[in-house]
Image (cartoon, rainbow, N blue to C red):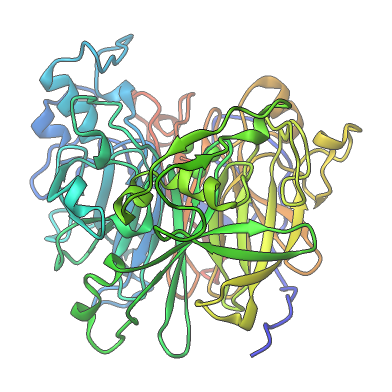
Length: 542
Ligand code: FEO
Ligand code: CA
Ligand code: CA
Ligand code: CA
């Protein structure tokens, strides 16, 4: 079928101005509640962090830090607009609640207990949440409440399992995430080494890890999806249940990928999909100047992926190209362990830090490229040297199918400040301007939301205000500021109830007095999941 045209939506909230301040700013007629902050109880019987430091066993049972990607899952027998499971990533520890004031974590000198504490605060929290008496709350002691941390043992699946596995201790730098059609959660490791405990085996990190929020399947690192600085995932499924998982490598620069499983998704038998992500074809994207693109297969023996391959390196970052490096791809495990190099050898386009991808209900695919201040060599898909503010690209798969090996792309917008004159800073945003798009999601009504992670230096906040979340009309590309975060934070993570009356959003690494100033306590600043709703109970943005 021909892809549906981009449509405008009648989104009625009154946009808010660029702001700084130690609070979450929301439009008139909306409410904000803090749902789940770093140190809050997760596992049944856990004691909350209330200002007194816990030991590693205690921290293992409470929320990790730096809340990032997340997803809401309905539960059988529960009205999905009033309850369900939230799986939430913890990208990094909120060290201010783990160690004495002024303590600096040093992985080289940390004690075993200090390492366990730091590693407890990364990974994933699964919590049951419910709407009762008009407020969302974590359902204390739910049997679903569970932590997956940097100390948990994970299975390893896929073609590199023999080299990496059979098990790995820890997941960390759990940046953003995705989901599968069979209701599992894909947490993405945005690091290829365990920087909190470098004694752990180096090949164990930089993977997509599949977690079942319902707890039926063992958490498993899926090596077939490649090893790089994974940001998030989203999927496309065809009418015949063929599947593609889209991914980005948030490196300076990094490539865009997709994985197409050999098997098909089975909607009738959840367990049949358990190891679907262990066999298939990995591709990297080449964006051509004429608006076409190719998915280049990253399979050993194809596209230059052989013993003695010549890796051109990150040639976009310097006027003088680096000397090529010889890399041996003798097996598919070699390709998967060294995926960044494989993509460069195969000729994929080096992008300005790929962050989030989202596939809309109209099957258009949006991707944020957050910034790349060091870019010296440009191309059509990364057109600005010293790209301080980033851009968003939109594409459509040829034939509108997950199995496509080619696509048509366009520059959706160049972020930046139109009041500035330098071409690399100006941008072309129609409406409220922003820098460094990162989180992004097309909701089930097809509406595009963008979240920012710009530097919080005075020069940046003077121009754009604190990091914020925007609604961007896909047809007019007009941007409207929906929410502004407290000082020092980035806004990341977005999920919703099916009726869209509740948006869950993450406030990551605030540096002021939030959320203690809303909660009325004297705790340090903490990353937290918030709930945004309308006072009249209608869908957000309706
Ligand atoms: Fe963890 Fe690329 O953001
Ligand atoms: Ca972050
Ligand atoms: Ca991010
Ligand atoms: Ca970012």
